[in-house]
Length: 176
Length: 176
DNA sequence: TAATACGTTTAGAATATTCTAAATATTCTA
DNA sequence: TAGAATATTTAGAATATTCTAAACGTATTA
Image (tube, rainbow over all chains, first blue to last red; front, top):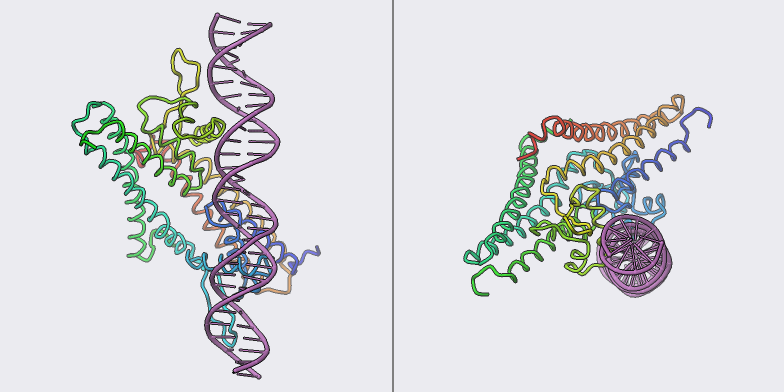
């Protein structure tokens, strides 16, 4: 090193971010490759093609294809048009709150709804049997399920409110 | 079915919750078995031993052992003493906010710290090379990394504040 | 239309994870 | 201390996931 920020330093930084984001996405339940691709795009001054991504990360084109599609689904990557080139190009979405919003909407929201459904159904089953012998056991189970259901409802409401605020105000609470 | 809530209905409900919680924990990045064990304990009026859990869920004792330990680490299950019995018994922690608090503290918090570290380090590398030729590229990378770092800091702060509030007030914001 | 350049899908290989059964360690009781 | 009851660890089997290379399909150019 000579004190200048040269190409190899850039390379080092890129690889560092790729690794870091790979770890993070993996931690949050996405695929590691998604984070790596996102990291690469995030530090690229211009959109990259599928082939370039594949080569930069030493990952097969098929794999890149699948993961880029996933990233698009999660609002983390946008496809862009490059004039005079018929390849598809991709760039990183840099509005993180927008990404979170998308994830909350598609993933957490759905999961809460499903949980809510399951537990409600189970509670329904308890309530059907009023004349049972085992009073205590019924009331115990009823109480526990109700408590759980209330909690899930509350979480679901919080998420809903967050999304509403964000929709209406364009993110006054969350954006910077 | 005869309209009464009988044992087989209880069984059905238990299995329903076990399945639902298994799905949820799996979704949130924990093992499925953890959710199942938690579900079983959550609807059990008395603490259960390792062997009972193993039999109820048709899972090897070894597996139960590992996952119960994980549940304890996450504050989701407590070991309890049953007089006159030298087996270990376990029961579900029913304060969900307490559980969340623990998870935030041990998992998210740590992960944010690590991310913060990585990105700061990368930014440091950029700043070292002031006299480089590629001015634009430097400022581009600098800007992007700063933006990312700020975001992570903000998230980290939010979590920190949540935990502080909860510590001081005993959870006035979160508890019900 | 033929040849080319690309993206997607797929079958199976590589890898990682989870699980069990058995071995080992620990704790308790007599 | 010996023996019994329990919990934990571990080696390897079972399973699930991820990845690649090649096949395929589609659009574009010559």
